[in-house]
Amino acid sequence: MEPTTHQTCFVVESGLIRPAERDLIAEEPLTIRVGRTPVATLMRTPGHEADLALGLLVTEGLVASAQAVGAIGFCPEGGFEPNVVQVTLAEGSLATPLPAHRRVFSSCALCGAEQIEQAAAGLTPFPPRPRTLSPSALTGLARHMGQGQVVFPLTGASHAAAVAMRPLDAAALARAIVREDIGRHNALDKAVGAALNAEFDLCRAVLCLSSRLSFEMVAKAARAGLADVIGLSAPTALAVALARRLGMFLAGFVRGETFTVYSGDDVLSI
Image 1 (cartoon, rainbow, N blue to C red):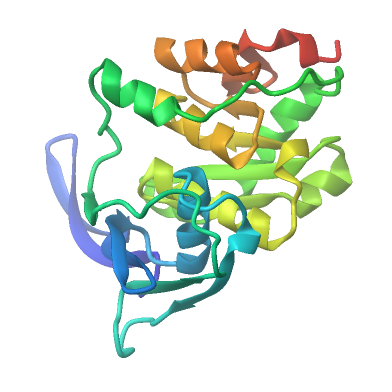
Image 2 (image 1 turned 135 degrees about the vertical axis):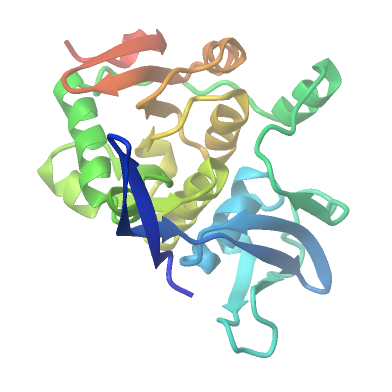
């Protein structure tokens, strides 16, 4: 299935109604199965399913690295098992016990201090980093992410995530990974999975997000080894607290040539 569908509709404007055509973002469930165990069913935009599965396994802490995955198979629509990603792990590579099968239809799943502590369990502070992030480089990455979006200009209904290697020069931006999805978590997981497949060293990479910088998104980035995160929208107070605790760089409202730094200003090169 394509990530967008073309639909006829009607537009009401100035008291008048007229027929029109619009592109709508597609949305379908996807089950990720490790061995014989289904670990998650989530709503996603069709496309890059293997990247999504690999990224989710890493950002949710189920495997330690891409090397833990032996193979990923996906049957497209019409296959033997459509909308199922089959993951085979390398022997002895499971980082944590597989969770019970869960349905993930909303990203707003965390509530309560215990759940928050569990989500941050195992995260350790990043080591100090040199001043290698220039303002122009960061705003350039945000622009590059926007230019790399295909679904959003058609529908206005997708999130995006981009991963690029430092230093953020022209060559790095040319290699940057940009992924889109109806879900912000899915967009992040797709971008991380694609970057791992491209053999990016995520410890030397910068992540850009179109969505708000929530606690969950910052925690997922940290699990993947991404210490430098920027976004087009605002962070939450809990996300800022986590970023400061882990020594991460976190900047929001990256629009045009301006942005707001909430954590890690010591890595900025000004």
